Structures are given as C-alpha cells and as structure tokens.
Length: 247
Image (cartoon, rainbow, N blue to C red; front, side, top):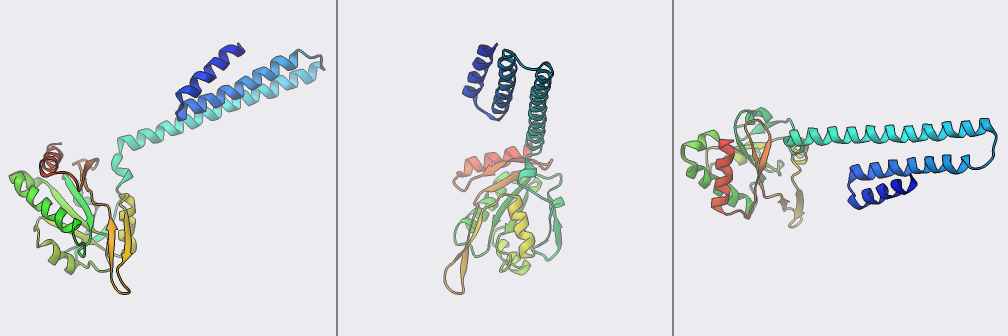
C-alpha cells in the first residue's frame, strides 16, 4: 500500500501544475495518516488511546481532502469565468467625456465591433502613426467600415481636453471617437484594460508618456478578440479587422 502511494506521489510531482500539486499534498497528508495508524498500531498501548488516535488521524485526513476539493472547485470556477468572459480582464464600465464634450460610457461599444487605442495628442510617433493607419485601414474596408467603431482613449487627460482631442482626431478621420475625463477616472479605465503608462519628464515643465502601443479588438458581444500590434504590417492588420467585423 505504501509503495503504491509513493509511486503516485512521484508521478504527480513529475507532472507538476496547480491541481497535481494540490493532489500531491493530499496524498502526502493521507500517507502520513496511514503511516501513523500502521506504526502506532504495532506498539502496545491503551485501547482507548489507540481509538482516540485513529479518530484524530481520520479527521485530519478527511479535513485535508475537503480543503483540497473546495480549493480545486473554486479555482476551476474562477478559470471558467475568466475564459468565458475574457473582456472582464481588460475592460470595465466607465462614465467619461468624448471629444464633443458629451458624456460617453462603455455602452458605446454595445453590439458593434470596436477597435480601441490608448494614446495622447503630444505623442511624437506611435499615436499619429497608429491613428493614420486606422484611418487608412478603415478606408480599405469600404462599406464595412461603417460597422466598425474606433475609440481613442487618452492616457494624458490633464492636457487632452475635449477641444484638444477634437482638433487632433480630425486630422486623421471623423470616424474616430476620442475619450477623456477626470485624471483619476481615466486612470481607472487604463488600469482595467491593463494598459501600461508612465509619465516621463523631459524638463522642468514638459513631459511625455510611455504607453502600450497595441490596438484592442472587441467583438459585437463585448468579448476580446485580440490585438493589432504596432509591428503588424498592413495586410495582417486589415485581415484582423475584417475578421473582427465578420465575427
């Protein structure tokens, strides 16, 4: 019996992983309990003390099993929730302001494939290049572009007011909706999307922003399809947008 348990432990340790580690721990505790029962029973001792010892070890074994099962169930439920709702890991409800100074919420994406990009108007290269590309790809989509919502969320709300954003995005396309708001509220949205941002001082008065350069692609049902990397070429990006619209 002990040899079988040891072989099981060796196999589980070899496989690794969260579930196998939990099971491995359960086997360890069970093995200790069985060992205690076996070796202690070989020694002469008071009958009542022996019974009491059996009960204690049996309770410990049952308790370890119950804890392991509960933990695994909770972990599996969490994994299922995340995999079935991937957008929950990168998005969150918000109440901010668009480039026209009007209220805007996450409902702007409801029922419509959406491309979301986080940047700022003082960006020297990545942002203007990305917005120019989005505008060009949108034109290449033809009539299908009417189904695509493009959002530009600022990561620099202190400088990017609605007026500044409106003048900026009009240089690229009138089909882009820019979003700003109070710094703390924008920061919450940025964090919810797991977007990296960092303020980098240039001198005593000026600064720039380092930030994630990817475009997030959201399906009609609100789930995350994927991203367009800054390094993706035009054919790859266009194919991703076409797939997004047809999904």
